[in-house]
Length: 206
Length: 206
View 1 (cartoon, helix red, strand yellow):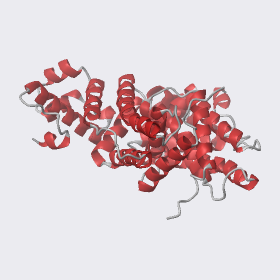
View 2 (spheres, rainbow over the protein chains, first blue to last red):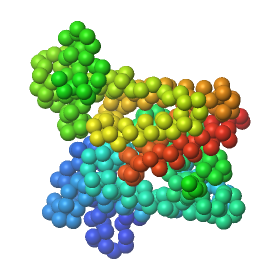
View 3 (cartoon, chains in turn yellow, purple):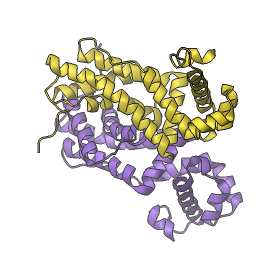
View 4 (cartoon, chains in turn blue, red):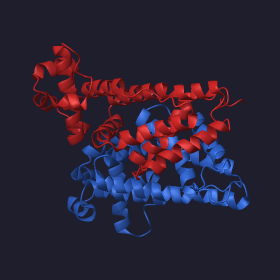
């Protein structure tokens, strides 16, 4: 089945429930990419997934419920943090990871659709908050490792470092609508590292 | 008329055309804030502005045309760059300016609606690119002044510094949906300044 190549790992052995979920989330992502959140219709998702409408309504409630579950699945599938032994290459790996995700036609369009939905739908906003919260928490560990190795000052805020690497890429992607390429990713990682080394990611002492 | 208090300066002396434009842009912003880009209807804007439908269709073409003109007007009205004599307080002024704009109920909702529109409409995306391009160009001058004063290294890229100050605020606002407060604004300005002082905003020499 085609969705296995897209949402790898969503089909767990033996479960009909898991197979239905994989098909529904795959169809949800297809519809989001093609029509955006405002064009996401439960009946259309059910038809595309080859699943009964009643099942979809009962299990996911509405379009926002589908988006919430899709973002949970995408977070489950996301790669763990890098561990190259150097904060410079770890942050670069994070920046490239964001770059590849936002420039991937399917994944990038999915993020943009959910980001658009988040501006007017509180459940979609909460799904974004949770998805990025999990990614930030995962990658913040590279900063803790760097502090332990003596590469960055004690007290450096890992979550803030990771937010600062991703921020400029998403700012260009959805706000200023400027290109996001390798040079942008490398510059983001390099600048954040310079600020972190200078101690600018430690708590401010009044 | 109410729109004069909202879109100050849009009513220029003596012009009926200017008065019509002010009323239509005011109504466009009202509708955007209330219904989002997908709910922006030409007829509704015309009715709200008290202007004939034919005029609105002929002059703005469609919802995207209204949004493009609204963003042009908002850019025209935006404050010029600070000039406090210190890059630290100039960047802080920029960060507070972004903070106040995104947290202003009317202006913040307008930006969010246009950002959402930009994810699926190329004209809206171009309006964003132009609006933020003008804001970045205007504020980049504080970096040139700082370089001239010897506060920052020669070759520091002003536009990139300004993007880096705004990025983390918008990233929280529309992507991670986390709160954007004074501490976030101050941290963004402080970290970018540390990186700029370290030379991380100069071109990379291979």
